Image (tube, rainbow, N blue to C red; front, top):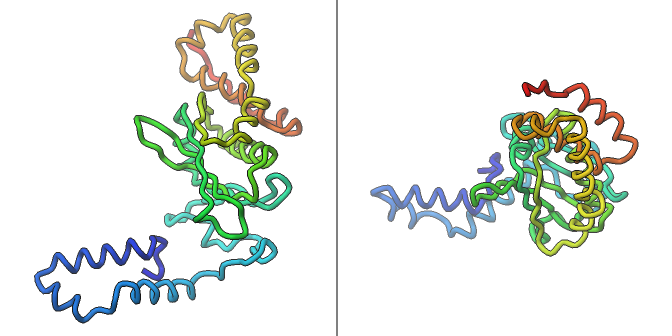
Length: 250
């Protein structure tokens, strides 16, 4: 329990459930300390094995300890450790998370303030939404909720997806009363961009190929996402898209 990342409450509940399923469970439970005592003891022991929780942004180590940058399988989990909106922020996502995100058209943005470390303002998460199931793929510790922070956040996400040559199928994003996120998409990802790109595809005689070729549609949507990137990154990403142009069969 000390070395695991699972919540202490869940671990204790699972242990008690396992004990209750045994024939001698009553004798074992009578001799055990109170549940609250067990939880407190485990929490104290776990804290001894982990870096201390920073009380200010200045105490947050740079670079982050590796224990926070890897998954249990040793895969990279830290997506970004840098300024978003001018202040240091942390974004986490595994490679498989990004792949799963790239495979879905409908995203959902959520946020929590109560389980967020005190040196940050919120933990913003981005989920895929498919067949009634929401799956978290991005976890961002942010210092505020203004448009610049969200603009930088989505720029980082899209840039990383471009870097790994992952298609962006995003068509809708659902948000919970978050005006700043809404403004980011309406200002930086306007419908007019997609429409004008599609008109250009039609002018080039690619309408039929677009309709029948999924690879070409993915490539087209990635072009539409260029509008979310800073100007100094657009040329580099455009060149990546040109190099990965699909060969149409139509």
